[in-house]
Every structure is written in C-alpha cells, then in structure tokens.
Image 1: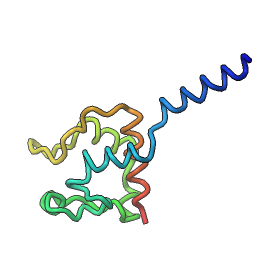
Image 2: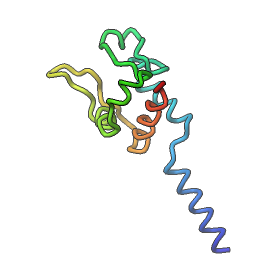
Image 3: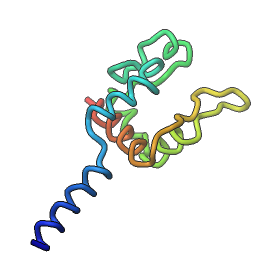
Image 4: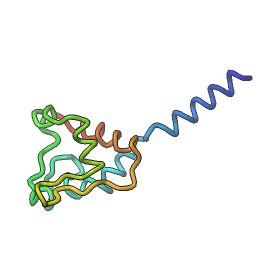
Length: 108
C-alpha cells in the first residue's frame, strides 16, 4: 500500500514539474512566433525588421548557449538603449527551459 502511494505521489510530482509539448508550443506561438516565426527561421515581418537569426541554421545554433537563451527569455535583449526583444512574462523557470529545448529542435 505504501509503495502504491509513493508511486502515485512521484507520478503527480513529475506531472507538475514537466512541461508538456503542447504547452511549449503554445508558449512559443504566444510569446515568440510573432518575430521568430512558427518554424524558428525569423522569416516574419518583425523578424526581418529586427534581422533575427535563423534558429534552423546549425552553425548559428552551435554558437548559442542555453544560459544566454534563458537570460534573453527572462530579461529580454537590448542593443544599447534599444530593446530588441522584450522579456517573456508569466512563465516559470521550467517553461523557459522548455522553450530553450524547443528552439534546439529547430536545428537542421
């Protein structure tokens, strides 16, 4: 009986901590796709205006560090006084880490 309770508690904890693929995609579409595009290529009106890099480019992906992407999501990106990317609000650290993993999947 105790083993069943522990297994149930562990499963519930795992569900709370993990971010589902649907949630990540929804967060991407809500917070990132306007500029980065649904496919990460940055081939949007705003993406072209801001000269956003192509996340499908393996060489560019290799130059990115997860910590830097997390910082950009949390704090935004500024170029001098100009804001190039606003911080993403309302996401947990786990959801932000899931977005970084989502970006990694664009690499070809």
